[in-house]
Length: 217
Ligand code: AMP
Image (tube, rainbow, N blue to C red; front, side, top):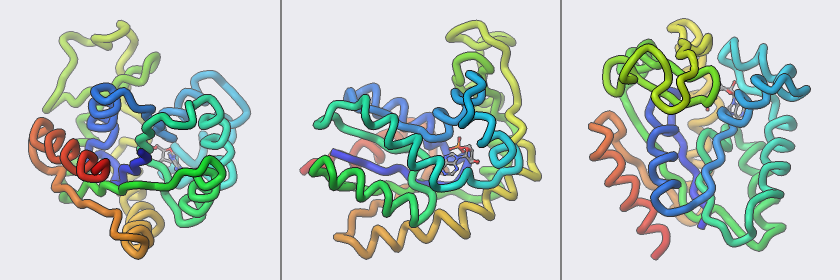
């Protein structure tokens, strides 16, 4: 089964995707995480992506599609896949459809997380990420036990693209380029399920799980 998780920045996609993928043993593919890892490793891709990411703009489609194609080469052909933060444009969606078709697969379900924009800006203002392993905390809702990463002891930082001005730009980019994907997928076999992600983490996790299970039926 192939599931796409769509939603604006700060809506909790990463947290929920990791939980669900871990519990069902699926591959979790977050292009944001892959790009941040490329930046930490100082690869060519990481260098090319840096300015776009820090400005809250999208990294060009060709780079993202190459990254995803490359990553999928290491994924078992029948593995469940949860895409998080990809695709973000119709060009990426078309590219994904082609890659999947080559493996006899398709997108089975699109889950959209919705939340109020002011709440998203507030959440991202409180978000801290581990510089070393990428673990994410929220100083209001899920703080670390101390001043460093609970998982690896790394330094916790406020991502440059989580600063309020950049967050507002990311929200505009989401509305203009990514939101149209919802009707793109709705036009294809009503694959889409919308979830109110403004609720507590446990409640969202339960609804997310049900949405994916329904897709498996
Ligand atoms: P995220 O952690 O998913 O919010 O991604 C952080 C940043 O990485 C985004 O603001 C973009 O600059 C870049 N990025 C991540 N995924 C994509 C994608 N699918 N297409 C273009 N840019 C992306």
